[in-house]
Amino acid sequence: MSTILIVDDSPADRMVIRAFLNDIADVIIDVDSGEAALSVVREREVDVAFTDFKMPDMDGIETLVRLRKECPQLPVVMITGSQDTNSAIQAMLNGAFDYLTKPIEEKILREVAIKAIDLGNRIKVQVEFEAPQPAEGERMVGRSKPMLELYKSIGQSAASDATVLITGETGTGKELVARAIHQHSKRCHGSLVIVNCASLPDSILESELFGHEKGSFTDAHQQRIGRFEQADGGTILLDEIGEMSPMTQAKVLRVIQEKTFERVGGSQTHHCDVRLITATNRNLAEEVSEGRFREDLFFRLDVIHLHLAPLRNRKDDLPELCNYLLGQVTHESGKPSALLSVDAMRLLLDYDWPGNVRQLRNSLARAAISAPGGIIMPEHLHIQDSSHNSPEGPITLNLRKLGDIKEDLYERVKDDFELQLFNYALRRTEGNKVHASKLLGVSRNYLRKRLGELDKD
Image 1 (cartoon, rainbow, N blue to C red):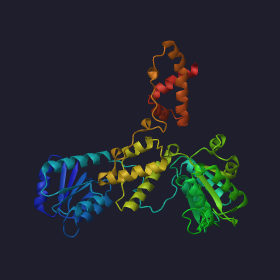
Image 2 (cartoon, one colour):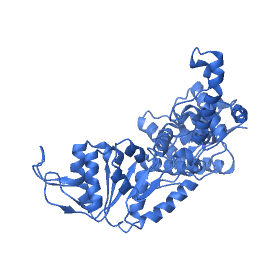
Image 3 (tube, rainbow, N blue to C red):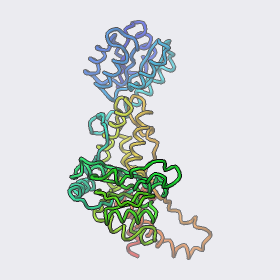
């Protein structure tokens, strides 16, 4: 049973809108003020509200804002006789589902009403967490087992001055961990200096880290203090340490061992008292074995090792994390908070997030801007389910496409190949057969059946 609410101080306009929508809704309620509209939504469920822009006492924008505060999932359509584009911008900034101008065209009004009612039916039940609150700054969010273990490790490592190596995939929040270690350490009153080693050429990186003397190279017109000196008494984070050249690695090793360095072009030895934290998305042990990273430096960096779990391995945190990130978007954009529909949350939970928290934040920010009325539906997220987005690409079981191989050869290699493929998928999903079947693009029953057959062999 659908209900439409019309808010307009003009009886004639209310009559026209009611006539146009009479056969669309089961119940149509029309009121002449924003206060009356608020009374209606407090007493009964409404599927869509149409409100005039210019009204005495409480105008359309204030009515819109207060309606959405009372009932965040209610689609509110603004109607105005003004041709001022600023009113449209204000309406959409404050979370209007749509914006129509007078004289009202019956066809357009009916299309908008049907679309809004359909949206309301799809979001009757919301994800069970509070509406996002404006959030300023960044912090770590999550209460999953990997995150709880990480919090404990941060607490244990913060008290010492030992070097910390933070590893994890891109977008997992390695810089946030470094900030937390610094904030809870005895050096919290000193500076936290962050250097992204991947963003600077090696010739510039050396000067950035250690500083340079006037005239030491072209364009060195004055002496420059390096990041290690700036961090004296505090903490320095060398992000993407795996991108550093062997020559610079050697100089960083000396700083760790002797706590001394020389500026580029200088001969005077400088002392520094710094707590070193490094971060990388590379496997430094493999980099060492391949000869791309100094083994002695690796051992000095890997005193305390914190590894950040990818988002796909801590999906229990997604509701809380989405709530927090949407609050950030609210704070930065000045828009009303957006809400996730149940279907959108299901899609988020089903996705593997190869770009981790950074990708999630970008998806939510884009969705919050494009979602009409601030209700995020699956189509606003622009992602596919996880069976189509493995970081290594989709896997499809279609061994007949291997080529024109003989049938007996096909039968001999098929079982071994299939078993290896299944084991790969199960490792990727930590033994979860439901997720593994999605990754492989096969049914769960097929996976179980074939695993049973292959185990017997």
